[in-house]
Image 1 (cartoon, rainbow, N blue to C red):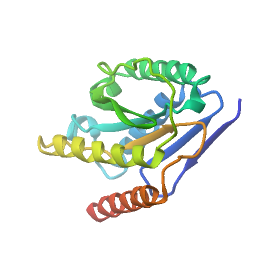
Image 2 (cartoon, helix red, strand yellow):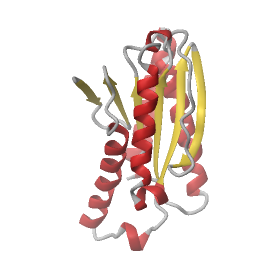
Image 3 (spheres, rainbow, N blue to C red):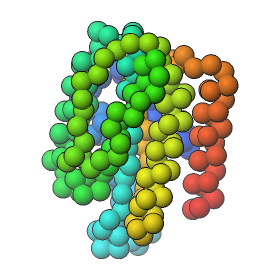
Image 4 (cartoon, rainbow, N blue to C red):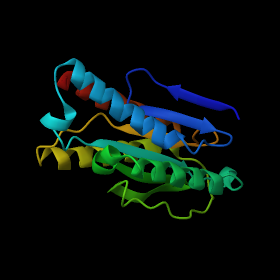
Length: 196
């Protein structure tokens, strides 16, 4: 099985494009993000367990539900369900990881708003339409900002979010939407960097 992972330096997104998506992908990537922040805090003399037991990790999965995914979508959803089940086996993930699902096929839909890994459910989805991937990225960043504000209003730390795109190809957005998505990502990154 060939896997192509692309990570843009300094950005809060990762594209995951697999001919046959690995069931381990979602669990591995979120665990990597959470463990990486725990290592950073230990290096700086902080303990995630004792200093901030409610620090949250937010993850959004963008699911390509375009017509070209008709033969692969069931496998993608099954892999996603398995990854979430594996997160439920991690006691820290159960307490701190929240996931939202965004579909992009014809238009963009919030399939599931942010839920804990114990509560999130992956419904069956139908494949149709084109792939508005840039619009889905914009919606994902909006959801992250809203959820981060929710936690911060309750004095909870929130780690930089992780966005995964499960897709079989490039987006079909018009140029203006793609530019808006790129600008949104740049602004979020600048704001995150300036806050450090």
